[in-house]
Image 1 (tube, rainbow, N blue to C red):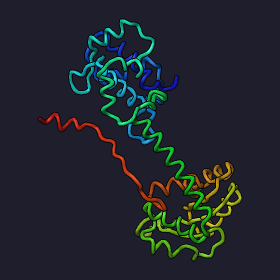
Image 2: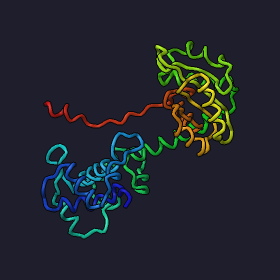
Image 3: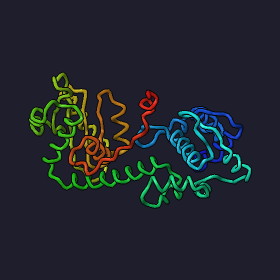
Image 4: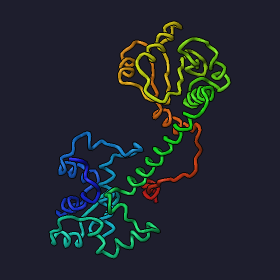
Length: 299
């Protein structure tokens, strides 16, 4: 089954606590994962940011909401226990405990009013935790930005595109300085090679570049041509970057040869430009913070 949303987790979590035992968050997660028959892959699935497991995040928020409604208490850090109000809630035999159910408790409504200036309807409709809502919005904005970047790149001149490619690779740690790397662009005169860049600052190895503004799909013959040019230089490393896409045959060919050839299509190019701040600027920064337990344990 898919990973349950955090509202679906609330009732099983409260039922798990119904025996009155104090359990750690880790114990809750283990028991709930078994309850929902989650596979190892589902338990390890990460949020888009890669900072936390999705299931762990949802169990944590389910616990927080139940605590804020007074159904669970936290006798010590990271541990939860059912309250008498929690027992009363279970005696009503609810089919589901969710945000709508918890709104009967004044403490829960006060908690939500303090944590937002606007009515928080999104989590009720989608079942996402606050982190998931934030990351979903971030991914949507990033995806839109990537499309804008790609359109801009496609409209630039071939010379500008070649320099953009070198600037990106320098930003990723290749090529030493822009001056050193840029000197090689368009200077080789070799068919199938648009530029050469140092693999490291010392120039211990070279990477040959092919940069093509391409509207459609780059097929296997184009990649073979590039590989042939590499062999002519006795080179074993190359990067083929295009604003288009690569045919499956081209991808399979590059993966099956001895030379190390990396294929970067338009979508990946835009993502790398965002990641390494090429052609983009930061408009706003949001920091997600948590309690520093070590600070308060040192009192």
